[in-house]
Image 1 (cartoon, rainbow, N blue to C red):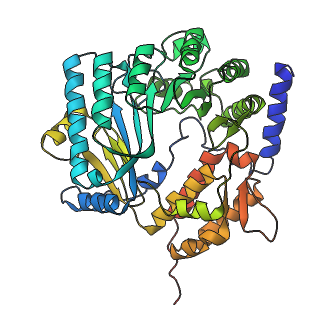
Image 2 (cartoon, helix red, strand yellow):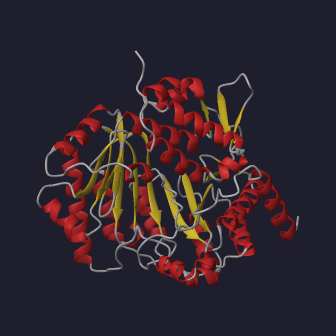
Image 3 (tube, helix red, strand yellow):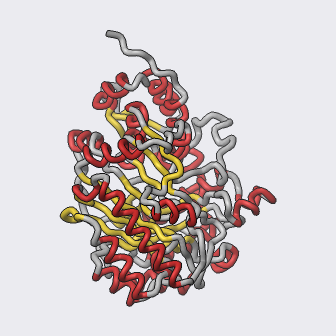
Amino acid sequence: MNNEMLFESAKQEMNHAFSKLPIDYFDHKDASTHLFNNIVRLYDRKEAYSLETSGHTSILSNSIDKASSIGFYAGVPWCAMLCSFCDLAYSVSTDTNVRRKYIEQLLCEIDLLMDLGAARKNVTSVYFGGGTPTVLDEEMFDQYLSSVIGKFRLADKSSISCEASVGTLTHNKMDIMKRNGVTRLSMGVQSLDNAIRKAANMPLSGDEALAVVKSSLGEFEMINVDLLYGYPEQSNESWLDTVSRVASSGVPSITLYRLEVRERTVNKKAFIKNRELFGDEMNARWKYFIGKKVLTEYGYTETPLGWWIKSQGNRSVPSWEQHMRNWTTVTPYIGVGQGAFSQSLDFYYQNSKDLKKWSGSIEDGQLPITTFKALDEKDAFIFRFCRVLRTMQQFNRKLIETEIQASGLERPFNTFLSNNIQWGMLEQSDEASDVFALTDGGKALIHWIIDDFIVSMSDSERVPQTV
């Protein structure tokens, strides 16, 4: 199949998948309103908890105490370069003293959490992100990984992930990661198109970036490459070339992200000036279907949604009973570092994005929290259901019926279900079945579907239960 035939086939598949959508479905849906981590929509609709009392630390401590395990994220604020699309890096400072002090204070932040009960818990996952951890020199990188990991009581078969920039990843730094137990490497390649890389201020050429990816293969249990679609004036040919070349490398995991126009980025200014450069949502969805066709051809499976894994024989499918056990045991996720966030079924909180305020709080022996939201049982149901849609791509209505009713959400849930069946986003296995699954259209629009679900559930009046 030549390129034009592939593009046309992907377009026809998309048009068929979206054929039942309301004519105004994509109104106000574009790069400026899209959120990959859109569970924050739920938190944004909650009132902030007062930080003037110790009540929020009690909620945090109680949530940790009742959890069987926890996960940690540790973030550094630096990158060698600031990409036009990213708002997660706060500095390009190369000052060794500043970096050393930051790491010391991040370890102090972990100690504060240990005092709240984290020291008694097994840690099932540790994620090193940022910014970019590999921007650190080798000695400091080694010290950073070993010092953070050394704080935790790691569970058996725990997952330790580290993000890397292709511009600062070396064989020596990969050796440092392996020596410290890193099991998963994730690289933000984004695009192999040299014009896009230059415009977005990304390091290295496309060929050089791909060479770094290839040099890492076989070094870790899992290696992931992030790719972005929806760049200003990105052509289908450019996107096809990137996905095809990365997939042909044999990298075991590829994540496809829709470009988001975020605050305090170069892209935000460009979007305000000329939003047409970024294309509309249908153009972005078209690229999703192109990527899907290519990755499927190379033997990748999308699970959970957005993440494509190289197929390795038959994969076991969890039973509904196992899934429901997982439903009730959401692991608290604790983020440390400047601007990091934390969440569980009981809370969401955000660390200060201002380095001086973050540092000052820790020096005062306080967690550097700027916003804390306490969650109730309705929020917990919304959180879990969104996770189900993303990871299982289907749900069993009968198994969650009691919780729907207990949360007072039966009416809005039925409306959500009815609408998405009518629009071709969900389908029932058969008329007698309680299982509803995302269609191809639903998988392609999962983030918008979750957005709509959160808004409709959060805005609903709780319906009292009859006795």
